[in-house]
Amino acid sequence: MEVIQEFGPWFVGLALLFGSYMCWGIGANDVANAMGTSVGSKAVSIKTAIIIAAVFEFAGVVIAGGHVTETIRKGIVDPTPLVGHPELLVLGMLASLLAAAIWLMVASAKGWPVSTTHSIVGALVGFALVGVGSDAVKWSSLTGIVSSWVVSPVVGGLFAFILTLSVMKLVLNTETPFANAKKWGPYYLFLVGFVIGLVTLFKGLKHLKLNLTVAQSFLAATAVGGFIAFIGWLIIRRIQMDPKADKTFHFASVEKVFGPLQVFTACAMAFAHGSNDVANGVGPLASVYGIVQSGGEIVKSASLPFWILLLGGIGIVVGLATLGVRVIKTIGEGITELTPSRGFCAELAAACTVVLASRTGLPVSTTHIAVGAVMGVGMARGIAALDLRVVGQIVVSWLITIPVGAVLSALIFFLLRVIFL
Image (tube, rainbow, N blue to C red; front, side, top):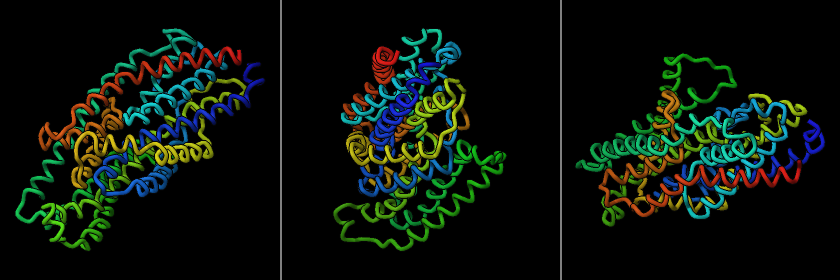
């Protein structure tokens, strides 16, 4: 307790610094891979992607969650042994934040799309092993993490594969692809609105005390889907065929229809990410802030002040703008060649997978889902459409994320303990 009182302002200051660094890493990696399909397909520019992220990430945070976060992320660490030593938990959270942020920076610089959640989980495991003991680690929770390496890309890829085949059957492989693109576009957009509506109602809005039944949630999501489809219909009906462009690329006019559709999915992905994953960056920050504010008391959950959310949102946008382009290139160009129609299928598949996971408890990672969805789009055109070398690099980066985070966190924890204790 004395350590908390003596170094409290220092701990909060370091938490703000490391938390901002972590959020920068989330923007450079997590948000970048969510935007990668839109930028890679040329549906939006990198500048537009940054604006979309800035607006809809913030909207997701403020409207659909982020106000309360677990202090011990994902139940990986048992805080009971630390009740009498809150300073160890503070140092552990600081070490975890810095370790995860460093790994995200390295991965982003290499263009590797890795999981933010897995980065922070690995860091927490490293701190717990050296700071508390192996008994403090809930090893059973890690089973779900490991299984997500397979479940996430497979489910996301399957949805994307099916959606791509549907676009090929209903639009591309017909006698009048442009007319059919305009016909089916609003229906696909309805699915976008419906799915994102369900994500928000199932996983967000808890702080608004909206206790909707499943039937009411589906009804509300249907209304959202109908509204999005109507807006999309108004935009699509203005798009005209471009015969000159069609001579160079047979489906040029069709892709002009899917371009605006993909802007909708980009906004939806940013909103979903903001509502669900931003706490990865500011959760440990809130832990430190809460312990210092309470004078050393360890609580199971911590209120997340709006200024911390604001700090996280700014860090995410700056991260996307400064280093996100490398991960965007990997997702949007490295795995397979994307067009607006293919990118649309990949993003919609990712959103569908998030909804399925939120209702069934599937252990998934949004990053792995996005990669799997892009691979599914490529597989619909044959395995030759995939760059297996890039896929191999991505899988290796996934496998080493948790152990690298653990080792870094353990080393940083030792250093912080020497400094403060």
